[in-house]
Amino acid sequence: MPSLLKAPLVVEFPFTRSLGPVQSAFLTGLRERVVLAVRTGDGRTLVPPVEYDPVTAAELRDLVEVARTGTVTTWAWNHAPRRGQPLDTPFAWVLVRLDGADTALLHALDAPGPDAVRTGMRVRIRWAAERHGAITDIACFEPYDGGPAEPAGHAGTFETPVTGIVAPARLDYTYSPGRAQSAYIDALSGHRTVGERCPSCRKVYVPPRGACPTCGVATAEQVEVGPRGTVTTYCIVNIKAKNLDIEVPYVYAHIALDGADLALHGRIGGIPYDQVRMGLRVEPVWTEGARYPDHYRPTGEPDADYDTYKELL
Image (cartoon, rainbow, N blue to C red; front, side, top):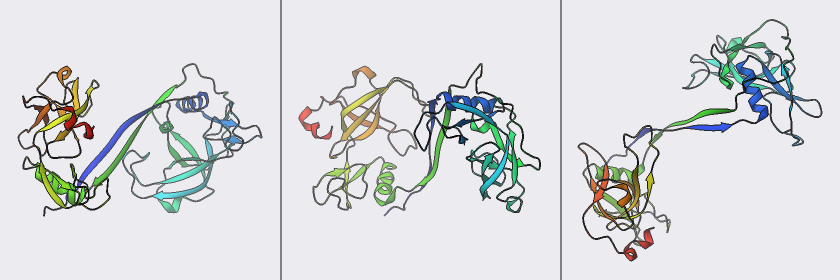
């Protein structure tokens, strides 16, 4: 029985979105060191501004400037900042009701320790040295002993407004594949592909998950499959991934290994991309020290008959 595996994994992608008139004005204002709010029909002033009244759902467009100073309404101490947070030293997360606003804005407060933070304390914005039209244009809040700052009365009109933002999304976590997949990965290191057979429907699933996805019963019987298989369907990739040293275009396919009842993913090589087809017989190509096939290449056999793989599409 191989030992269970663990590995750190990262899921990361940039999320690009366009901005409506209200969010565009708000972020452009931050770039210019101006904090804009939106006023509702009943006179409430909302920061951050929203495009629709959260109470009445009415469309909102009346932009007003509020002060750069405010009052902490509640807070929580962050003793261990994480990657991407506003400050790299311990700080407080605070909700700040800026002077002139009726709602609170969430951001970081730079303070020497939790004893220096309290509900009701006065704070002001510390602007980032370089500003591009994002919430990070506010570097943080800092303690402030003065009275309310007077806004200049900016109406929210700018010559070069920010029209879109790119927000990176990232998830760092530790993944443990469990018993079934650990055995599968361990077999791959010996250039073998092992699935598990369902005791009820008798289908062999690769990669195994420890349970049959059809019957819902536990699986334990290991079955070696392949190494050859059949392309059941595929796509042509035309956009180069940043973390893959593979020239486009290339083909990524579902491959039904001989003896398996579920197709797995694999890249097709050793053949022009426009000659890949359903039914193509392929075999794995391993590189030195790799724990999984680098790609699959044609075996030279006649194409598989459609009836032999149609249930695996």
